Figure 1: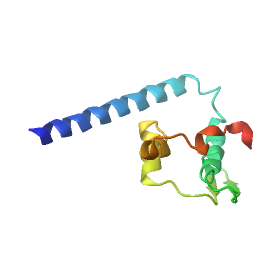
Figure 2: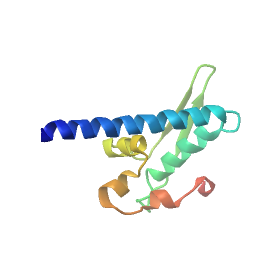
Figure 3: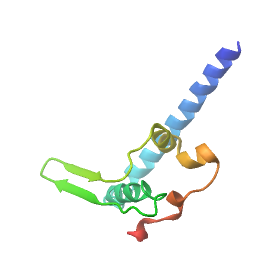
Length: 112
């Protein structure tokens, strides 16, 4: 029975996360004209955040654009499973892991 309750709790949590994502996507769709360039800033911020804990590193980005695609890459750290779960769950992976705020959350788009 305890195992069943735990599985149900996980399902409820997943449903709640999915509902938040759907709601946020609907909100973004309503403001698409105002947010057309937002994705570029998000990619740059993620690249910068990937080295935020390493004071001696700088990040370089490369953007390749053709008529069919945009290829964005950087020399920073890859997302970990915990980072991806943090994005999905809308929490910082470092906060989840350590219960504290990190340099990654202190910066903003204007830091570029």
